[in-house]
Image (cartoon, rainbow, N blue to C red):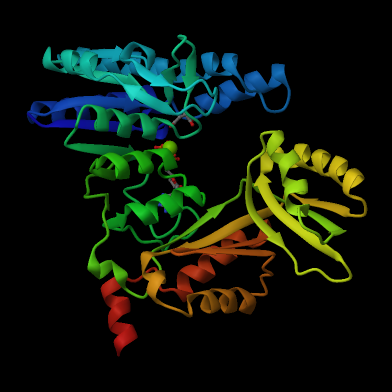
Length: 416
Ligand code: ADP
Ligand code: ASP
Ligand code: MG
């Protein structure tokens, strides 16, 4: 019998009525003869509400073991309600928390990684004829502490369960009907992609597209899980995340991603000598602050400027660390800017085609958008710009790279 893992995100289970609709969809799929595992998120807004309660008590950014105890309750509400709705329809269903399903993680609270899933219990429950309704985003460490997997982590629960139980497909149901050329909420002309490669999806997720959590994409690629993003509210083929095909090597980019969660820090006039980058960044990482982009200018007069980005939540903390560093290094003027965003273009076709970077930079310059930092890799180019230009930047690049057109159409135009 085929086994399908379905995941429903927060908006899809945001009200009792929507939970009833999900129950209809799940029951229909089971009636078609599939075994079904359903992973659910907390009802929309619930994780944020719980975070805010914790922040009220712990200070600006709550964290740690008790936060996980709190946040995991959001998903627990949804599994109970969906199981009730299924049972009401005459569909055998049983709810399960992460811990009850032996989803074993490391002990890094609030951003734990799944280490092992013992699929035996899941299989037994399925073989007994149940739809198994699993709380996403949570697990348990080897000492029995509840852990959570980071924002958007229910995607990862779904893919990890699909891998462990060797499911035939993992379906991510959400409030858009697939993966688009860019966030359709920013660019109305964004187009749904029928397929996207794992590599491109990984880049998009790491560059800020929240439609799939990056760990979910990593897992799916590693364990070969057929992964599809679909709408909870309408029928359609969605987007299949797949391996690269020859036709995908077209000289085009596939998508635009952006990230509003970054902040920029600069330290000017530091001595241009061996070891300076380490002296600046080691204390930052010692404080558990992750650094994303880094730029060091060519030195002059024995001095240089050093700029990097961190998560916006870490901006103030990083500034304090830099103040101490400057005292030790001597010289140096510190600056911070939390109002920046990272804008990126992604595409496997970029590998074999020069000129894409200059097209991107020219297009932004024509709109008088100043580029503050640049970073490139084989299949992506990222720039840091002021936050107020984000929407203009996304729309400009979407138009210049003709992402509203299907690849075949762009191909024709290019060869005409
Ligand atoms: P869920 O609650 O179902 O997990 P998310 O909010 O995490 O849903 O992810 C879906 C959202 O991702 C969409 O509503 C959309 O605004 C956003 N998004 C960002 N980039 C893209 C993209 N390239 N394609 C589709 N959706 C995107
Ligand atoms: N409820 C969690 C969040 O809002 C996990 C998820 O929805 O995937 O981030
Ligand atoms: Mg999500």
